[in-house]
Length: 208
Figure 1 (cartoon, rainbow, N blue to C red):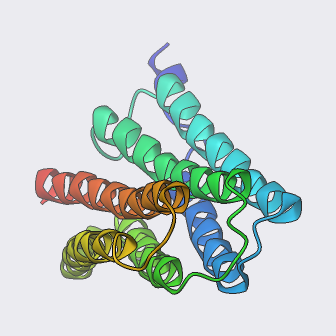
Figure 2: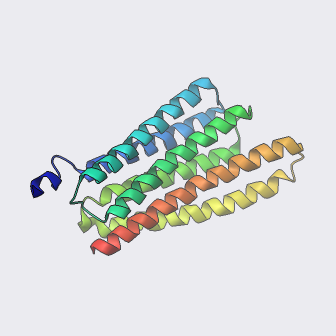
Figure 3: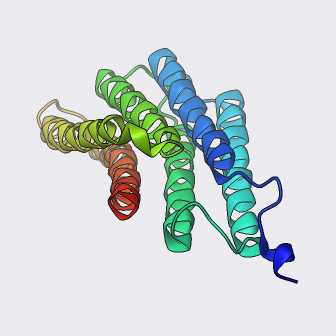
């Protein structure tokens, strides 16, 4: 009877690797379209596809979690990690959707800088998450988490700087409102990356 609770061909590390790969793809694509300043139906469709795959990845993890008695680390940490990774892709999609809705089809150097930092942070998230497969990589995992935290602080500074600039460059009020929301959402992506890092750090501490 107990055997039915044992994991059969279920590898949570593989599931997390797949899920976080969608976040990396979304971050890379976001940087590409921001560099082009093109936020049309096609770019939104592509980002929606990443968002959909991210949802499926999170759903697969939660589904297996509900079926599995034995897990590689705490169940609540598995659930939190899956949710936070999914939130990264969701927020990037939200930004692209708003860029299209607000008709902001132009190259913006500030957003491009954000996109670059977001890409770096998401790549570090992937490194940290994949490192959980082998706890001999604790130093590497924690280094990635610390760098994510640093990039989040960089994002805070960038946000404050660009928001201050919005009120000094003579833009109209509607444009200021639109870009203010976009920049704040971009920084939120970095906040979520930091949230992932905190979950990973908690897992490492518990497993050490």
